[in-house]
Length: 260
Length: 300
Ligand SMILES: Nc1ncnc2c1ncn2[C@@H]1O[C@H](COP(=O)(O)OP(=O)(O)O)[C@@H](O)[C@H]1O
Ligand SMILES: [Mg+2]
Image (cartoon, chains in turn red, orange):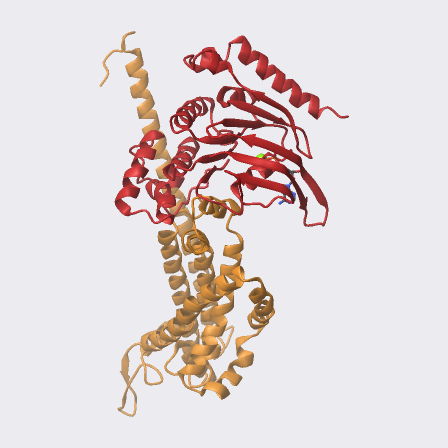
């Protein structure tokens, strides 16, 4: 599944009646199977953009489309991984992961099987019947990812999903996510505040300007293609291409932040 | 056990040390929790003993006439008599007070509370959910809810008796009207407090509006609803005397009122103590039930 933004913009009206221009006219085309990373200073409209794609928010200007048709609301085909795990504490880990399938009327046996596969995939075997609030932050985030994967959405929208995790857990989840998204040819929209993470994960990286957010840099990441995607993470990160792109992005962000 | 630590066994020794240490820490924590609980209990008991002693002293020194403040022993006697049969000087045997044992009075009141609050527990969350999810309904009803909440039960019991008769129906209504607003308000607050992301997460997993309500909003609101029920039950106890002012026998509130009017002060005090203890016990039960139903509360 591909998606398109056609001159999308967003103005919020705050409780005090003030108008906040969060997102400037943004146009974008993201083909099926692309892993798109978005970076930018906080408050630049990244989450706003994700909400529009998820269908939680109707943009005040322009139109967002999936496979050519306008987004009119949330859909299971666009799974969302939130910054906070958002698991339902009244359900066990397993029930959380199976919930999407349940919503969609999938039978119990199939739910169980698919759910288990996804739990295994994210390394939560043995924790199926735990209470969610008894899991560590990293495990909760894994469970949330499993919950989204169980639904097998074509597009995965992720809002700084690894931001609150320790370095080791983050690296492991990055590798898992990369593998899953490639194997299943998912289109991924991935927000992060880590330039390094964006270059490491993305096929393409967008940099957004401070509010009102607009795209100031749009770069393809060809590094892993060049190295045949064989390089382990650590070595990839020290190639000149990686370092060069990382510095370019970082400079672009800082340049944008400097007072005009 | 480790004998004579050598360099090779260094790791093992320190591991065993470490394990021993954490066991000790756990044991210490348990012990300090226990001493804390014992300390609390001792404090509560001490306050009780002091209060009883002062009470006893005031009455023993006859600082206050027994009519105004009977002695602890007299109250205890009234309590015992109200739960047993005794022979009067005339040779007649009477059981309990006002033809019922005290526990029968208590049960009669609890039944009334069960009906009044029970209906509120069924209707309150329902109305709360509707008001929280339908904007105009909330706008239309909220002022009346606040109005009702502010009314003193004693003020409108007379009206309810005119409408529904002096029997149990008017008492059920009074208790219902007392219990209903706190449950509705708690439910509304609960629904409003559900995190937006929780709802969004469900919607993007394919949930319909109905499924969001059933699988997300309902369970997420449960802790607040239970809190509202606890407040409502507490409020019902404070209302039960008002409910039983007229034709309230059997009923512990009725007994408290009637005995006061007949200057059986000891019995009145016994009734008050029983009402208080019953209310505290019921609340503890509800609190416990709450932790069973929403074990995640405060932890997620
Ligand atoms: N519901 C809202 N009402 C008013 N202003 C909002 C609302 N949501 C976001 N904003 C504002 O819009 C801007 C962009 O927010 P957001 O998309 O969350 O940024 P980011 O995710 O890049 O940090 C911020 O300045 C934020 O304060
Ligand atoms: Mg954000």
